[in-house]
Each structure stands twice: as structure tokens, then as C-alpha cells.
Image (cartoon, rainbow, N blue to C red; front, side):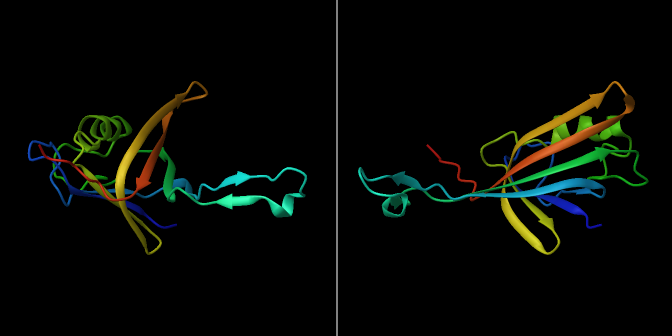
Length: 152
């Protein structure tokens, strides 16, 4: 199984996580690439479906969704030396308190199976099930694109 690697590319100078920090997920369960290509349809009256007019007026979007079980690791999942990110609790605390995007300037990349895309983290979810109280499931939604920050 391949590793999924997130790399922080840029951010605000006050961020707790500096640029070039990597986060490695070694045991992913699901990895979805979702390409949306919006097309408007305009059916013509008294015509069959083959004559509908299709209009592409918007750009495409690509989302990459990663799901994994957060487990005890033998080494840190982050390239940052501190804090420790070996236990499930440490990993979740790090993701929520440090690795999350905190500024519009925070840009990331995701790499898996030779595919690398730039963008930012749209959403992180962590869930614990009563039937397995020692396990957490994590999910990251990544949106591909250029992170643009305007300046006043």
C-alpha cells in the first residue's frame, strides 16, 4: 500500500507549522478523486433528448478525499520534531491544533502513487465508534487549485 503525503507549501509567518512540513498517512482505507465538470443543459421544446443544448460555462474542480484509521505509530506522522505524533490522541491534537489551515495563505500538496496536486485542506473529520472505543477514523477533504491571498 502506498503512503499519502501532505506537504505544507506556504503560510503565514505566525503559523505553528512551517512550510515544507510533511504529514504521512501510512494506512489509508479510502482515497477518492472526484472531478466535477459542471455542464448546463437546455432541452428544446418539441425535440428529443439528442437535441438538447449543453453549455460549459464553469470551470472544473477536483477534490481528493482520504479516509484512514488512526492507529498507534512507531514513528511520528509529521516531519516536525515536536510535538510527538505517534499515539492516536497526539495525531488528532496535532492535526486540529497545528496542521490545519489557519490562514488564506496556507497552501498544501498531496502526493500518492506518483500523483501530486496542490491546493488546500477543505475539511478534517475525526470519528470514534462506541463498538471500537480505542480507534478513531480520520477523513481529510482536499481541494485542488491555486491558493490565492489578496493583499490590501
